[in-house]
Each structure stands twice: as C-alpha cells, then as structure tokens.
Length: 360
Image (cartoon, rainbow, N blue to C red):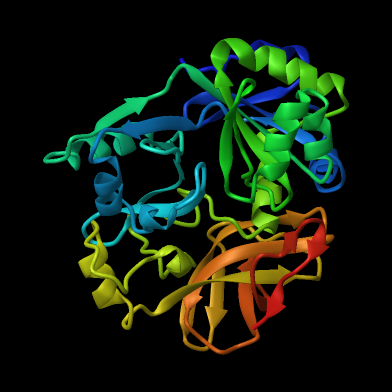
C-alpha cells in the first residue's frame, strides 16, 4: 500500500487526481494542470511535498561529516539558516541523490528525495563511522511549498509583525525557525517562494489558512513543468548513480580546488578533463512534443532527452538532453520515426515568469 501525507484527505476532498509517485499517493492535479502551472507563474500556488525526506544531522562532528559526505562544501555556510544545493556521490562520482542542506548553528537540516529515502539513509549511516554525529529522520514533519510572485504577500497575512520582519530579512536559500515552523526561501519552480516545514499536526491547518487567503492548490504535474522550465534536474530522470555531476550540468556545485576530501572527489578529478557528455536545453518550435528517452543526434554522436514537455509559459516544447559535447546550435530529435530539428540552448528556459534561455 502506498504511503500518504497528512494532507491526503484534503487532496481527495478538493477533487485531486491521485497517482503513485515514488511509493506515495500524491495529487497530480486538481482539474487543470495548465491552469495550475500559470497560477504559480502569475500568482501563488501551494504544493504538498511532504513525501520528501527531512533528515537532521547534529553532534560535534556534524560539519566534518557533511564535508566528507557532500560534493559541495558546507563550510561555505557562514550565515544562520543559509542553505546550499549539493550532490551526494558514490566513490565512482555517480550521483546517489541531490539535496538541500541548511546550516542551523550547531546542527544541519538536509532534505532529500522520497524515492531514494531508504538508500540515502543507509548510505549516510554507513559513512558516519568514525564521526560523533546523530542522523535523525524527521518523519514527524510535513513540507508545503508556497510558490509564485504573490507567495510572500499571501504568507505575510498569516504572520505577526515580528514574524514578517524575520521573513523579509531572509535572503534566497536561507531559512529561519519561526513560531509557524521552519520557513525556507527555496523552491523548485523558478519563482519566488518558500518551503514550509511544520509538524504533521499543523500541516492541515496551515494548508487551509493559505487556501483561505487566495492561494491555489497545485499538483505534481504542474510542479514538473515548472521545474523543467526552470532548468532544474529531476533525480531518476536527468541523473542517477550512473551519471556524474559534469554530465548532469552540476559542475557549479562542486568544490574541487581545496584540500577537502569528499566521497567521489578522486573520481571527479579524473573525469574533469575526460568527460565527453553534457546536459543542454532543447527547443522544438514546430509541432511535436519532446519526451524523455527520445534520441538526439549531433555531428559528434548520439544522446537522448532526459526530461521533456510542452512548456505552458513559452507555448512550445522544451527538453533537457544529455549529448556528446559539441559546438552546434541545432540538433535532430527522432520523434515517431521522423527527424525534427531542435535548437540547442543553455537552460534555464524560464525564471520569474520571463524567458531566460541563452543560445549556444
């Protein structure tokens, strides 16, 4: 039987189409995936992402442990609540998972993907040998993602003056613990917004209060089109254990130039100058939809689409694709036994409601 978040009954009562996602019964949409996509780009939408896994890491060796575990360096986190995005790698440099980690003083909060929960927790525990560290899964917590240009104005209606002062002081990729709960200025849509981590008991009340001030519920269908427009990877589609960060467009998250040793670093240093694949964006402005696993042909060889969809914001099809490195501006994609020309661009495609992709 699939797992359910504390908001499952609220989704059903709102008419959500429920689907299995990583072993969880989750809302795909509440009637119109396209409308939900647009409300996040133009207003404010609310996602239930309580299927994600929250792990708190504490103890006197917490920082040293995470500096070994992660490819990005938590030593960069100098401000209370500041966060960074990182990969967790195996010894071969393959991506076990991508995650966000928040520095909360003498402890850290890590948020990992639901589909990799058991693997991630087992890996973290196995790598903790020799460190005085406590790794605690917080199954008692739920996560709501409030996203869109009106997200802050909607959330502010539920906060006291003091809480609003703290909210406005947050920079992007920073969190604070407020009476409401853990509020992080992060997201997966390319829009302004927050991820709200609260106790499971408070989740339904917060959900209802946000809907009452005019926020619309949004399902996982729009979440996927929004994240793809924002050029954000999806674990299991755009990367996995067989893919290294250079091949996943994640080189910017690596800290390779200092003396810190982390799991996978040796392999990455060898791959840095020999890696032959890259992740690019594709645009198909004629009829047709780009989908995962379609073949992409360039002069230097063949690759494939890792994620593809029709972009509601742009009005044509977009994709992320892993292809042999090349200097071409166009490629061919095989769709239903036909080769269609696509533009090769540098993602993201859309941020804050505006077109931002760059031509190669």
